[in-house]
Length: 106
Image 1 (cartoon, rainbow, N blue to C red):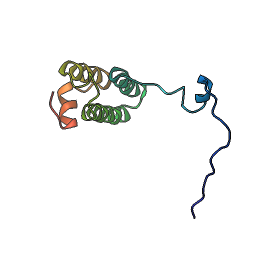
Image 2 (image 1 turned 90 degrees about the vertical axis):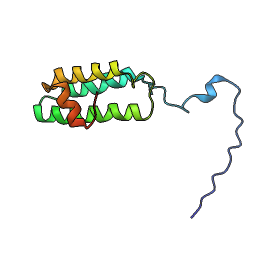
Image 3 (image 1 turned 120 degrees about the vertical axis):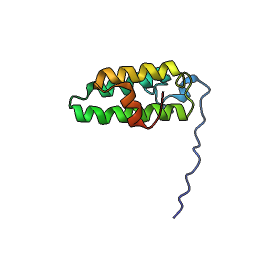
């Protein structure tokens, strides 16, 4: 069943207010650094060590996804080393073990 939506007969006012409600003003445009900070924050907020290790793997997957889509500033070696060293501090796992677990190399 196809329903036809009839065109509105009202005129659209020529004011900036005509856009009101047509977009989400609460939406944010995050930079790559903000996304990494959010990933690390999620690891930090996890209390159980086993769940924290799993969250760390998710964070590594998130970093890989950001690199795959080409987010500016994420592909830097220095960004990756900083990310893995901070993740190592949070989890107690060495950066080399994290990289090995992720299946990649720094």
